[in-house]
Each structure stands twice: as structure tokens, then as C-alpha cells.
Image (cartoon, rainbow, N blue to C red; front, top):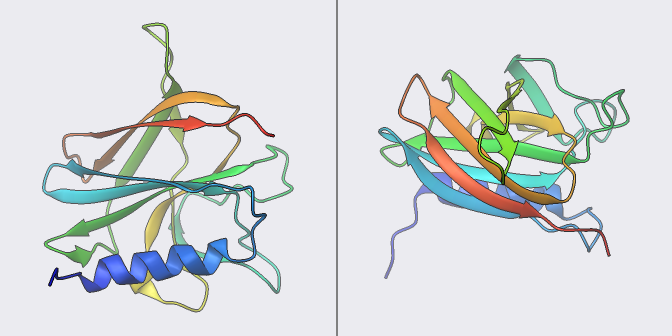
Length: 161
């Protein structure tokens, strides 16, 4: 029987909890990689709310959240769940940069990284990232944790149907 860490179960439940009320066409992207000694799960989800009665996320540090319906009109939630030795990391300096795939020299964009957890679920669901606007296409994301070597992720945002 395969052992599953508490972090893996908690992260899966956290994602399921925030995905349930979503539009059925919204697809989550999830990838795993190492950033030095840290295990990083990068998720690309629909934009999530940080305020109001039905807030999905609670910001508890880092950059201000890009609000759904705000001036940047975010449509995605780009976040990194970080663990070390199978345990979630609740406090870290996480840097997330992304760019469109394609021509060499494409400029890396820095995502203002907020530390957050799923509302009502506590620090075991801590993750790092923010809402942002992503056009359909291919992307590369680079995540560093506490100055580690970067974890690289390649993902595609599909065109709307």
C-alpha cells in the first residue's frame, strides 16, 4: 500500500474545496518539481476571492492579493504549495516568475507573492502566489524557495470554448 503524506491529502482537499463551486469548464493545472530541498506543487486555477462572506482564501502575509473584479481583471490563481521532508512549509520566501513560451529573451514577469491558506482550513493549507491575468497560450513558471535553485514548470492555458 502506498503511503500518502498528510500534506498531500490536505492539499488535495484544499484544492477540491475551492474547485467545487467553479464552472465545470474550468480546468486545474497541477505539476510537481523540486526547488533545492523543497518539493513544490504549482497549481493554476480560476481566480479566487479573498474578501466578502464567501472568501475562498485568507491572505496572511506577503504581497496584497489581486482581487477578483479588481483593476487587473485577474482570471487565474497561480500558486505554489511548498513542502520539505513531507511537511508543509508555512513560512518561506517564495519567488514566482512566469513568461510566455516561445522566442528566446521573452521577459520574465514577477508575480507579487501573497502567503495564504484556504479559509477555515488553517495553516496546513498554506500556499504562495496570487491571482493574475493569463491569456491562452504556453507558459513557463520559475519558483524559488528561500533562495533555492529554481523549479521550472511548463503549462498551457487553453483557448475558451
